[in-house]
Length: 344
Image 1: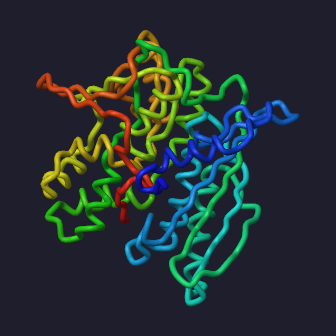
Image 2: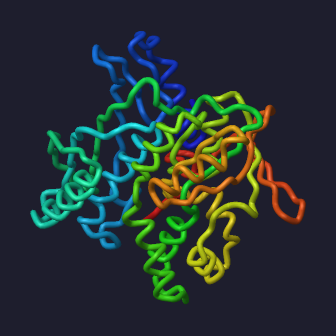
């Protein structure tokens, strides 16, 4: 018998997919991607995604306010829609609550969800309630839409493409370090910056739409599981490999300060930390500068070229001193079952 810790999260997903009948032709993208893409009778594709926040797995109740938790559960789902270039529409929320939870917690949770949903132009339209004797659970499902001519998927990366990313990476993992070790000797500016990036991430919704409408992007995903892990998702879907350039990875001074104080190589966080919710995408080499300008002019967000797509499989990282770090198949970021631990 194979245990879940041996199989890993993504191995379990593949096992589940193989146990089900082939999807009907209306399913453009099904199990294995963060977002299901469905053909309907209308002129646009229907998008469907869901995510769950489990107490003492994804968060510690004493380290996050209900308002922050509500904001985060929305943002991480909106980020999945953003990675397709789509628009979020409606959400369903299921709460599994211990009976001793105060109503103020639920009020704060919905206050945070309402704020982020209004920012995204979407609405909560239903859900479900249940009780538990142990840890609370917030399960969030989000529907959206996208034009068939603009949708961006993980597949589509081509050998020779340049790899780009919005914003910066590593801050969320640095924020987790601050929550786990609150007495770490860092400046208040760095402490506040990385903690906010971890507790209240911002989905790159506008950036996703701009990238989709440019017609220049070949493949895209958001960085939720970790930069290497999500790059691997793109490579696997595209039948390609990738080379990342460590010296070009966008890292804030705040992240560097926290990693130094923690005695950690900052690249460990940048490459495998996860939960930055930046957009990772590929474009033809001749289009990279144009795409950078389009996104910057439209949103104010910087995009950085951080590597290139290769013919051969696998993901490797090249460092400025000429050394190379290869990432073979296996968990290199957040995996629910592969013996990895995540607290926040």
